[in-house]
Image (cartoon, rainbow, N blue to C red; front, side, top):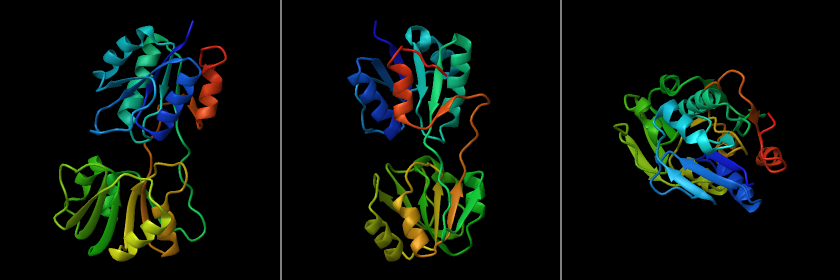
Length: 244
């Protein structure tokens, strides 16, 4: 009998995982929060919208053999709900999380624990590339700086002095160089999404531009974290259960 896997998605890794599992004959459903209006859809079945908290997710796990949390590293509430629902139902579950970024020679990174701390770290009069996503912009509305706000969709609010750039990555290094130069950016603000080092960070390093990097929220205690899609597939496909 085919295994049934629920993937909490929204990342490139989630789409790759769904494709790999579907190709192996696994019954895979990817859940998308619905915060992006035109998301890139994965293979297999797709459901959109929240579950209604831990209770709703636990109910959805009645016919699920394995739960994979492949949400964005900053989707802390969804991960907390996954932990609670898996514990309540006894469903095997695992978190698929790409490694965070590590500063290298020439990087001028300042790590902060929150968006609010990032906002407080911006010097007055700075010219900021703000690449924290649509939902993080509100923390910067009162900062005395000019912002180039880059997001996939229009934020609910913008700082008083801001230009909005709607774009979806990944972005080429040459384009990021031109962006920083053309807008005379003096500081980059980003979340530690992890994975391959993004071009904006390389371009900032080349120009000795400081980067304010927001650290990821902590994972629940005892979580089984896996860094690659290959490892998840190896766990699920041979025997249909997460070996943990």
